[in-house]
Picture 1 (tube, rainbow, N blue to C red):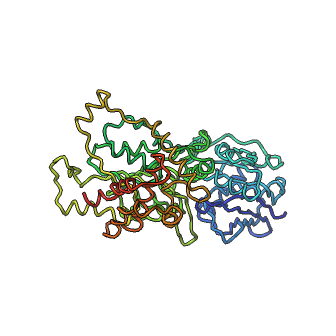
Picture 2: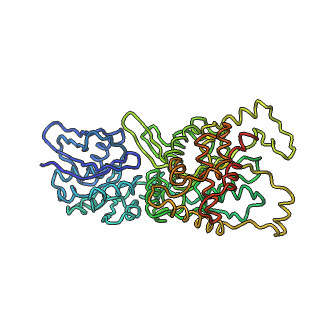
Length: 526
């Protein structure tokens, strides 16, 4: 007997850390011990692995088995270590080639019958292993397509423990009849299971379907061109949600690096379908207003998991009926809106998830939705209106670049649309304008870490991109009057730069600043 070794990966947030799994089968009372800060699911692997080995005809010697996960100071969680533990135990008994097992990545959960089941987070795990020099990955067959998205790594799909042994030069008995009623097609929340679809749901529909709403459509175009956050307020049925759902369709495709990062988040969330390849379109997330803080921001009782803000990374997060969301959810958006990431601190460590998304909020003018300029009879008292509006705090609204009122569609606008005398620009046309504007911004920002105007910090706006005093005079007047904060001023300048990019100008004019200001305060003054 000797110490057997294999490799696996633990994920802390989206960051993967290579873990060496060591197994020692020694004399002593029969026992199976796992050390190295395993969580409950991983600690239970001792029973799963022992039963899987026995039922696969690869029983462990009736001795004391000690499995160590190194580095021992790094918390480890989940059942994806099962195959690595089994491989290390078999290597310690010379049941396979020890050198082969020690150099390969192993991922997968084991059933008690020895069949290998799929797991989440295969893509970020393989990416992390490749960064550490690992060039061979043993993964469940159901996850093979996902692992194959990482170039430079030989992917060996396995369905049974016998396949793992054969992959490392050993001889194994034939796999028994599959006992799982799912027949190995997957598990809930992972590819092939009940919840394996991912992304794309915001791409349906065309902006040409919109009736009226010229100002809202213009604000949507500006938001897409500059990566700005958007708040739309208006009565029910005015088209706020429809407009928001069409925003991803006019955004540029993801770059290859962004596509890998976005796909890794969805892999960890269990919402990725590997048959579609990398997610190359901006994702769209629209959580219900009853969603918890953990569901939206990330977290969870079993370990930090990405929330809707991370699944919307490099895409759109729609909070429909925003004032109805829990206040903890809304106030928790401040960090990702500023930093582009979510930091989840727990007693056993800190997890970071990317969260650079475009926020789109919708809200009614009042609880009943009838407080508009159309003379409708609002049934809300002034106190109810004030309480409703106060659900969106000033610090949150200060981070929203564009705030536009969406009026009800009039009969005149509907008649014009039916006669064909009023045609809205199609999504394809707006997407072309957005692409041109973003190219201009990218050229201007070349050599900086920012890609679009919505990401440019104030120090850069007031430094290399400083505008003449005459151009920014309207915004400075608002700042002096206390109607605009310094953060709000930065947001106005960002929007002004986007307006100039859409117009094909090299720098904003005073009209651009005034127009940006007009989209700044409607919620507060309505």
